[in-house]
Length: 162
Image (tube, rainbow, N blue to C red):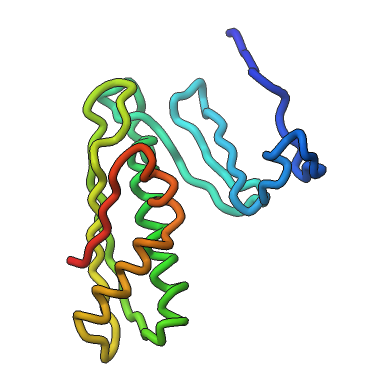
């Protein structure tokens, strides 16, 4: 069995350095992934611990089908970001959100190709809020959602109400 590491692992609390911009990155978003039982099944976790998930390749693609694929995790990250941002922004808008349902759709058309355009459909239930306000609200969430904004340089991401 051969093992290879491209670079040493990062310290858990990096010291700030102008030469290394990654040293200014918060541990809040640092994650790691380690394969299990020879892979490709892997466990992902947060740097602070306490949160884990299983990633894998589909059975027909040589995996065990025991967890999310990378593409599914990407789309799930978009859904999680939009959901979190809806609740974050709702406070300042004075919107009492009762329920949010989000579907994200896209595809990876070829090996090595980026995602096809990504469609995010949001069904939001809020008390005493009209359609016009909800449309403007979702447009604002679309404007500030960090994960979709991080993707938009590569692939279109459209967020709309159901």
